[in-house]
Image (cartoon, rainbow, N blue to C red; front, side, top):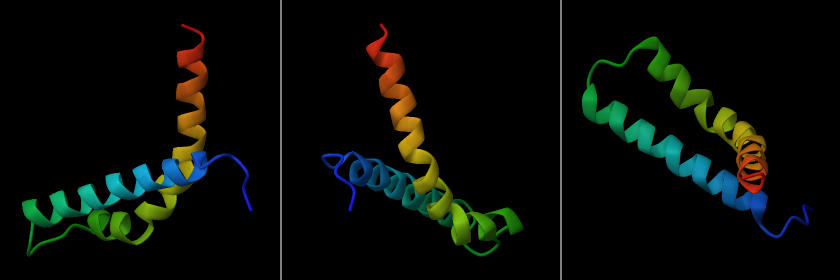
Length: 67
């Protein structure tokens, strides 16, 4: 259990929203013909975005606190 006051959950929620927005844009742009990279993004994109979202949010907040 992570006791970080929901920071991880918020970061993963934003990553999930970004992922599904990307999937919808890909489907709208090329509904019948998907590239190989599109398939890769749809298979592992959510996992990669979820893993990168938390360190990215920590970096952003640490940079913002220095201003």
